[in-house]
Length: 168
Image: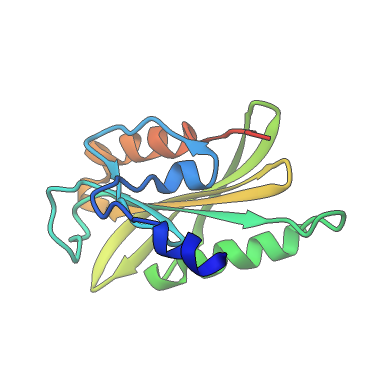
């Protein structure tokens, strides 16, 4: 019966969580970044040795998986709105936006590099939207402009290494 089955389940509180695997994703971390072992959206990457709240001089990145409505897809306008929501908390400077694109395994991505501000500190922001089969990936990274030259390349490399796996 259902109660006996439920009573037989034992959870291992020490079992590692893998938020990337939960979404059939993988990436190659650069610059000391690690995926936090939390199970919520967005997936967070940062240096685990840096205490929270993470200072703006340290790199931080977020990845969100956006499910398409099967058969309907998700519009470009909806993706732009979602990306705007993802960077709204860092006060993006719309005048500084540089738009680019890249292709990852046949999936097109639109990327943005821009400036922003958080807590009075100027930020360098990198983000992209990538359509990938029945999902889209939104990736956002930011760091203080004063630290961007040294640390932003690792953030970009990490986010661009993101891959979706089909385990069906």
